[in-house]
Length: 451
Image 1 (cartoon, rainbow, N blue to C red):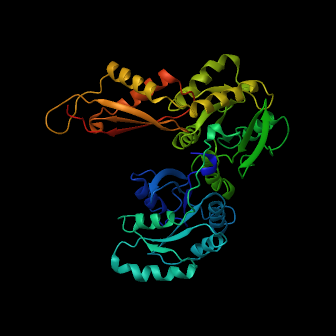
Image 2: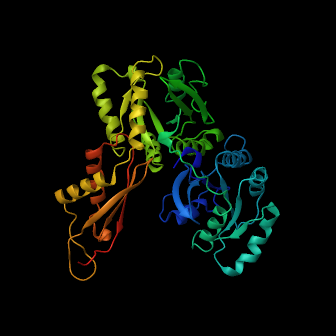
Image 3: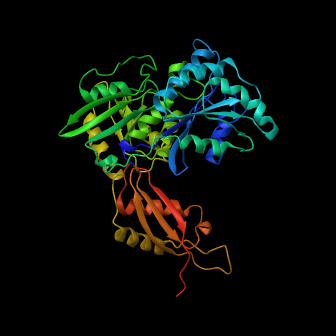
C-alpha cells in the first residue's frame, strides 16, 4: 500500500443511540464497540479493516456525542459531521427508523450536503419487512439519493447497504511506489493530549512551527510539517491528542480521533509520545493498539525524561515496556523535547523501523526458515477428517509490506494450536529482524498432494 493509494476511510456517523456501534459490530463480525441503550456510551472511534465489494476499506465507528458538550448537541453533531467530511472518503449516515426524523438528523444532513463525497443514509432498526416503506419514506426529505433500510440488530440489508456505498468510491489508483520507498518519510506524531507532541515537532525542526500550550487539546487538526536532514526528506504530522474515553472535555477533542486515524493510515512510521512525568497509562496502550491495528511501524518516545530521577529510570523503562508489551521489538527513545537531550537518537530509530517495515524476504530464504522453524517445534496432529496425521507446512511467501505480510500454507490450519502463529512470528523476527513493525501472518489450508 502506498500513501498515494491509501485505503479509503468509511465513517459511520449519526446522532447518539441510532445504532452506530451495533452496525459496526455487525460489519466487523465481532463485538468491538460497547453497545448499550444509553446515548453517548461509545466515546472512542474504533477502526476495522474490511474487504467488501472487491475493495479494502477502513471502517470507523464514530464517538457518541454528549448533548451538553460545549454549545450543545447542535454543535457536537456539526463538528462530528465536519470531521467526517474532512477526513473520510465515504460516509455511512445512520438514522433511527423507529424514532423517525429528528432535528439532529437534519443538522447532520445540512453539513454532509456540502460535500461531493459518497454518502448513504442507513435507516436503522427496520427489523420487520412491513416497516420498511413507512419508516424509510420520511428520510427522503434529507435530500440524499442513496437511502437503505437496515437492521443492525438482525443484519437485514446492512451489508448490502455498505457494499452499495463502497461501490460509489472512486476507482483505486495504481501506484508503483510503496511507503518505505517514497522520497519523503511520513511520520505521524500521536499520543494523549499534553504529552509534548507539538514541542517534540518544534524541537526536531529547531523552530516554532506548531502552536505549543500547557492547555491540553491545543492541536485540533493534523498538521503536516516538511523538513530534511542529511538528504532525507521527512513529513512530521502533528495530531490532536487522544483523551481517555469519558474524559473528553470538548467537541474539538471528539473530532480528533478520525484525523489521527487518517494521519496514521497515510504514514509509514508512528511516534507514540509518552509523558514520563505521569508514566505510561491505559490510554497510551489504547493508542498503541490503534497503531498496531493499522499496521504501522512505531518508535516509542519517552518524553520529559529529564524529569525522571536517575534512580527511578530503570523502573520507568520497565513500566513502559510492560505497558506496551504487545508492541514487540518497538524501540524506546528517551528524550526531552524541552531541552533537546536524547534527540539525536530519534531519527536513526525512525529510519530503522521504516526499513524494517519495508523489508522483503526472498521466497527461498523464507521457506528455508519455515521448514527449520517447523522442524524445531512441530505443529501437532490434525483433528479433522479421517484419522490423524501430522500437520504439514508446504510453503510460504511474502505478499506485502507496511506491515510485512506473509501467507503460509499448511494441510490443516484449523487444527493448529492457538499459540502457534505467535511462535512463528517470534521465529520470523529472530531470524530476519523486524524492529518496531507489526507482522501479519496469514495461515491458509492447502490440500496434501498424494504421491
